[in-house]
Length: 151
Image 1 (cartoon, rainbow, N blue to C red):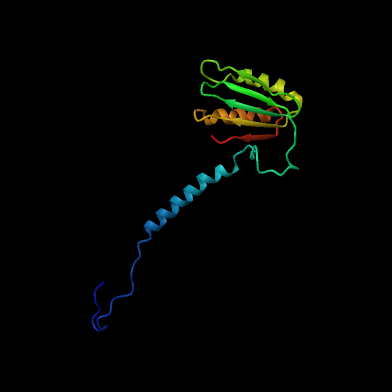
Image 2: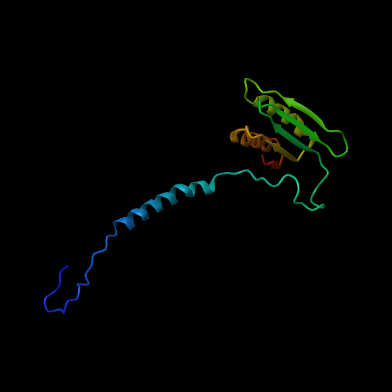
């Protein structure tokens, strides 16, 4: 791009733009979009706040199930009823892991009492997959409202 003779010292206006970096960024953005769109449609479990935030009319005095996972992966199940004393039982872990067969049979026997809500109380050592599996087990046994307590 030199100066043209007789043009009075003006530069040539024919400039080539390097569009290769723009196409590189665009292709990365399209790949990212295609890979992340899958996560939008994954099945999910509906949860809502377990306690608080409701008006008095929305709170009901039905029985509720409280499941607490301790550091040794034992599940402490407490059945809280409005007119009777709370009953509590512990589902002991097997080899340091949650005994899912025992938990499934216990929840099947417990949920025959028409319990509609449950609260899960994990600890800081509770693994994410254990909480999700417990929520799934509660959903399979007909409990429609599941609350998750923050750690």
